Length: 436
Image (tube, rainbow, N blue to C red; front, top):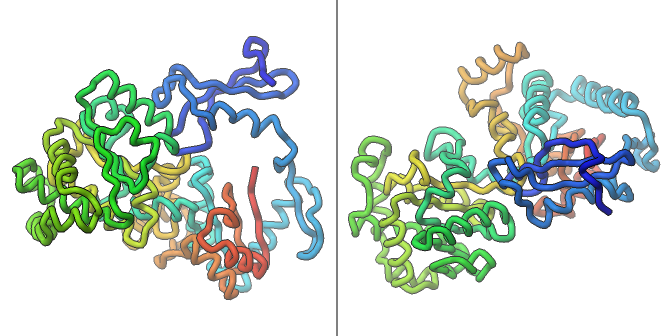
């Protein structure tokens, strides 16, 4: 079923799937049917859409499994029944108010999502941290992006990605690790493919245990053993230092603890690292040579690094290559964290995790808490970090968390231990789900 754009209302929006954030033009006909196309003038995708974006309209047109109105259980073991918006919201507010009055603000929590709009993220954070008085608000971004958040703060002092999509067409070397953007960020990858096609000297290095679709245009595939990312990054760092392909001026003016880093990367020879990684020393040397010779170098990563028990250190070891070479803070250069959801970064900007405050303020800093409190005109902000995503469900299971409000995510699909999450939800006094 298609909609004729000439006889339809027209709206501008953004694709709600991956972290690329493609612009879409939405058409709605007189019968309410929806169609979409890529926005030609949108700087991210320039009119392109992947298969997911091209099929966005099916979500709106197919009403068979969509939530179209509020539903509520009069009692725990009764079926859901349709109610009005006012009735549903009044019930939720009354239950939360009574639980807070009896057990304190830490007895309730919000579990939010990278699917939320920035404005939604901000309002619910203000409600929970500023007016309920608890930091028990966390996002499903905790499951994917928290390693990058921590690494950015450790490396740069704040959680900011130091480059933009416009830099993609300015780089002449890409190091893709822990990611398969050909599948997971396809429109962004099309831009890199087009850039390489127009500039054959551009080098693409892909580090991945598997030969993914992203390897199709790679000049070098490094099929490293799983979990050996830091060893590879340190080996490249050693080679850059040995070849003199680093920036003493940048290191002197903008970094700290270079000597400690140098000692760390020289703990193993390149040959020893190659054995650990399951790679040839020659391939590691080639990767280092291309990175060292690049006039503008971008690294891209996502869940292959982030979702790891040592995710923060893996990301830091990748960022270190940029600090070593000065390949940061200038056109076409820098570490580029690819998010998994459309607004994971917006959530981080608004303080959307249990240990953050808006605008990159630090929850542990009394001056930052006071500044946010003053701006909001709220009560005192709690100094103790709230429960993280997984901790919320542990707290529901043992009775500490009485009620949870879930926004735009399905923890019974995404959490690491679904059985435990399901049992925790069964034990909760009250559960609110805002879905689509």
